[in-house]
Length: 582
Image: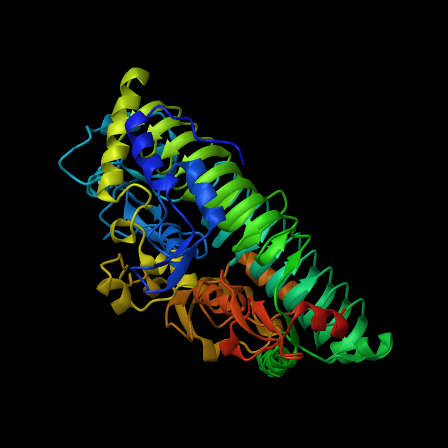
């Protein structure tokens, strides 16, 4: 890695070089959680490339901070008044009416009807940078909801890339007809799924790859017409089984003839809720007894972490896919290189302590920027170069706090700002959660780092109080889940005009035509739980962005694992797993 950031900030460069020239590998204590963490030689090499001081927080707390500014695990929606000139209607938004930030509706925000430069302000040398940013963010209008402009018929989604006809889902990537799901890639006609790739007609499943017509399946690849599977590959027509390879017609890990299997399945009616619950409970025993591979890595060269595919030289990174190289402490990467402390990206390089930055190069401490170059401490900027502390800019260069500068004035101003921030201890730190406009309980952080309301408020972080549904129940027939038809064949179309009360949250929800047709097509019983709660419940199957160290359940060798030891699973090291399963 011979690249070094272009430098026209001599005073800052002198100050940061003095810090980095004497920096040696050492241990630090995180001021937030008290955890002792290492500053490795390889970390220092990156700090020198990016010209940043070493971080004060440990890797986990840095990740928590990045996740705390992103809404991309949970599809959370509110109604909030649009602040665009001449507008006063309520629009669908990530932010509630009580959130102090102002929003513009999606179409207006992306139009040429307003100029983000009109919110430009001078840098105040008497105030810390983060205090100025906190005030600044309350003046500039936010985008009401973030979705890919290339999306088609996909209004109720969070983030994503080129989705089509997706609904109430988070981050559908090149996917179509995805409902009530989180993180789907290149998939179609799936509902209630988590982290699936290149799959179709799947339901209530997690971590599926190249699967078709699979239901209640987890950690499976290349499977077809299966129910209640765990860690199965290249299997067809299997039910209630685990750790199978290249099998057909297995029922609870026992082989059957084709005729016997088909007869057994024909006598099962999962469209009847009581039957489904019976087999769901039985499958819980299968999960507990199954062998779990300690780490899921494939073709990962010189890399440590979990969920690594086709990457090279990645350290303590998670869910990193093909085309990634030379990453440290990165999560959710696709075609990213030479980056550190980075979450959620595609087609980017030389990114540091940022989140949601794509198609960009040389970006630091920024959020949700696309097609950017040499941008720092900026949010929601597109096709911008040489900008610092900016929000919502498009096609701009040489701006500070959304104020246009000449190229000759930009560099001395930037030099002075960064040098002052370095001396005060601000430069090198990402935006603190104390000034995040994203509620912690709506953010991705609540999934990876769950905290109670009291814990969040004690830290003076943003918490969103519960907002009552605006659904006028007087206009509908309200039905409790105990009164729902037990069998899908007994459900008539008038269920679409009724409101169901969630048995877990007591919140109302309705069925859509797509999902009712889906349940009928696949003979599945109606849900009794609100879609958002179902998504949250499914996160029990999610792979955390962390590793544990404990003995292999078979040979006793100390291993790193992505499975929480508190769950009591049977976890094997790679050697034992390959001997037993593959």
